[in-house]
Image (cartoon, rainbow, N blue to C red):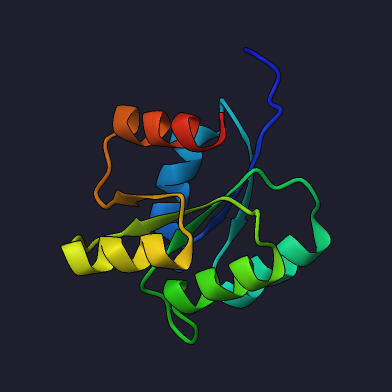
Length: 122
């Protein structure tokens, strides 16, 4: 196994999705798992060198789009990949305008997910 040098912060309110992402990524990356936007923002404030945030769009309280705006306002160079069960031209356009580096749709295939993560953060 190679040394894990990249750190990914995963934020999804569904435990099953967090666990699926963990199973796919844990052999390649150091992972931090959070269940809501507030935990995600708090973690970013106290954890330097997060290489990528994987952020669910549909979450209770503060949705992923609002959280993406906050992340980019506080940490403009932070790379963010959105995780969504929805895909539309309008949504993809909005994600791009808000500064997301990419997105992955649920359900995701392991190879596709890994390729997108590698292309986004190495």
